[in-house]
Length: 136
Image (tube, rainbow, N blue to C red):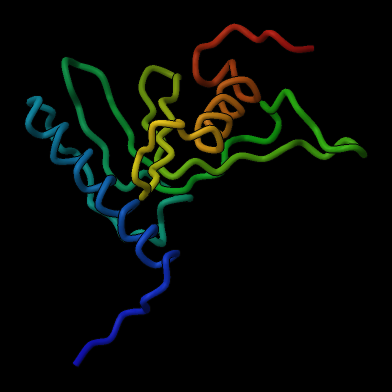
């Protein structure tokens, strides 16, 4: 009998992996041609797990790949850049779409923690996601 951990963090990781697979399936349903993948999750920060071609564009999907710290706008006291590791990163035409998968139930009060995290990525890595920086 195979036993899996019953911790919330395990379920959260499974949800992230499910989102990765669902994203790959969605690209296929849109007519994208799969050029590479799926690769092992352990390679997700070294090479894209999936590579697609859609309408002549190459789309790469990464799993928990650290964003380039040299591109960060924000830094800790002492100068070390504030790092970012989104759950999923979709790369196309030199721009990134960041996905922070959350295994949570939505409430009427919103999800401030998750919203601030995504806004932080957006602001800290504005040139990577195509935003105009408002700080600095």
